[in-house]
Length: 180
Image (cartoon, rainbow, N blue to C red; front, side, top):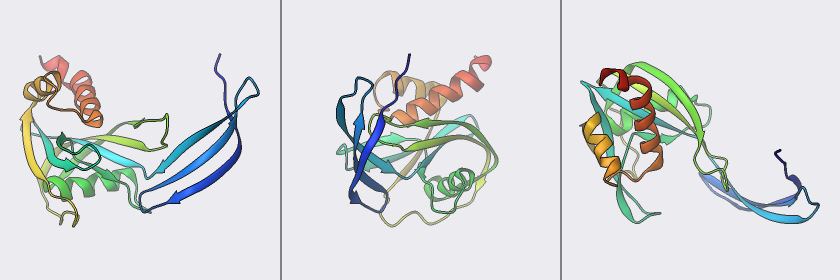
């Protein structure tokens, strides 16, 4: 049996450019009360981009974890932009390619214990060169690996970003296991 929490009060404590923080007072099923810190975050896209059986990655410093991470192309969905439009834009900004074939895969929540951020995953194929200027605050290195290299990097802990791990394993299981 599942139980829902009823929101009694909601207080916005911070409003920012890409996220807000609110504190909700909730009534639990046992009629006790608790506080929930909720991060309202802009939704995002993540793209598994494949060309010549190689998957594109971005190598980028991430301040929140204070390290360089290897990630699939991804980014926030702008206002009045569909997830599909955001995915195509991010491909151009981050790896310098457009896609003639862009397939929606699934939606997933990054960390629903405290944030409402939803990521829409896409598979991009039939890529062609098409570069957009990167964001002013992004310093990226573009790399590509075949699926076996990527899977080994996940196994060896070299890829730590969960959206990247999720996307690679999903595409491998759904589209590439029959090729092996």
